Length: 326
Ligand code: DGY
View 1 (cartoon, rainbow, N blue to C red):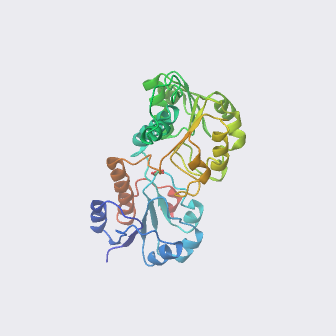
View 2 (tube, protein in one colour):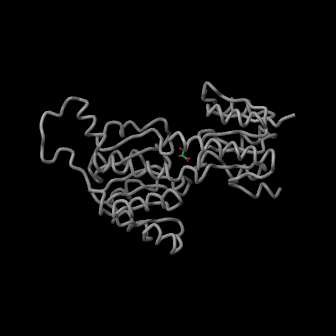
View 3 (cartoon, protein in one colour):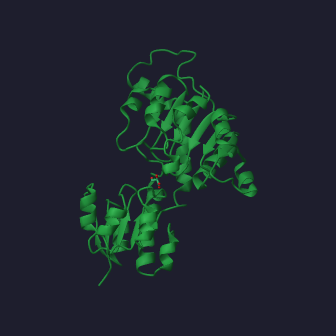
């Protein structure tokens, strides 16, 4: 008998076909959004689940799914997993790092440029038929080249953004991270470590790339926004909840900062209504990793983790390797 797995969302048919060579697969081709109770019900008797970042794996679900051995996330972020509860239950978690680094850094930079150069505002203006003449300050934004790029969270994606800024646009790069990078990596990224306050005060453009956790919840709120330059832009490609979206909407309206670019939102896919009515924000629906080759690579990595663990006892990117020693 093949092990049984569940694929929680619609994914590439070729990845489903690969999984079906090894497993008895229940997939979700209609891409239905299951409640927690439905997910729990569907996981009965299943050893593995392919998740996409939105499915919550917590102590309650784990207690109700005693056959579950692995949850493979098709995302690098895994704040949908309660890793401590999974480890306690002997359930392995895996994520999808590396394969999305450059694509996500590209998008972070694109969102930064669109925000600083007011592209969304300008496009809406043109589409609405308001463009009737030239004006000296029409949609005049902020320069990227030569500006100071601040990065909060300097993992692989943060480093990719630093390299783009330093080498592509001659930016001065400063960063803050829980731990300082080694000297060789700092030199490679041309980035200098600073305290969080200095980062907030000095950055012309601040990009957030830190993981979400209880300690990063509202890491950027009213107090932090007040420390930033009134000409600064803020970009969040990390996770909703890292920015206090209500406070950000107030700061954008009051011009405490000049503009923001947001790919992630607290409580997404809902977006704080105040953000929808301020003009100086570029809003995208969590698509930083969304190129076809990268999404395919992420899906294959999640599938390879399921196959690696349930068939060969060798997962590729385990998050709680303590489970492997059980
Ligand atoms: C990730 O991988 O964590 C991304 O946010 C998903 O697109």
